[in-house]
Length: 76
Length: 139
Image 1 (cartoon, rainbow over the protein chains, first blue to last red):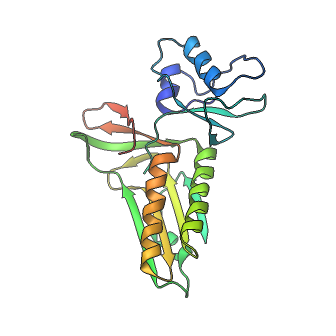
Image 2 (image 1 turned 120 degrees about the vertical axis):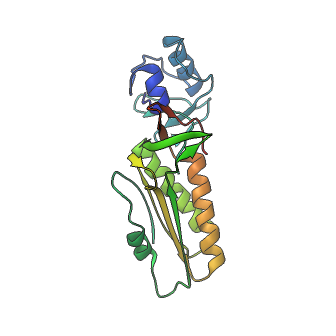
């Protein structure tokens, strides 16, 4: 899973690897990340992108998906 | 002409204007977003921009696809810069052009507003007191 900006700082890495079972949803993955770093400054429902598009909490992940946690964007 | 890019070099407004130029256009607009010296009452000395490059490019392209549907025959070129920028430097430039002014102006507004809402770009402000902080939301 890719991490950026403030979330990369919060978890101390720009990428983390999580072992998750088949059928894992975006929501499950966020829960797993938060469990792994309980003290990190991550909101309960961060934006998640799967394969470079915003995803919903119920979307199911597959092995080859590129998953990223997206901090509040601040472009412009 | 519809083109979007995330770049790691100074932006060139003249070049973007040239890209949207056409004999068929009667209106051309240029939006330049620049680094300003104060935010939320704190004195800013510069801003460090970073992006999820691959997705930011795709998301910008999606915005341009929507713009093309909303404003038929509009031309748009948008570039967002990443890296550390000094005061007054351009972080984003949008050039639009159309036969008529209304679609050119409206398309420009659509692109910048959607960019600020959706495109995965982040900024860390550097303050004159030496501290730095991620900006939490679009501003």
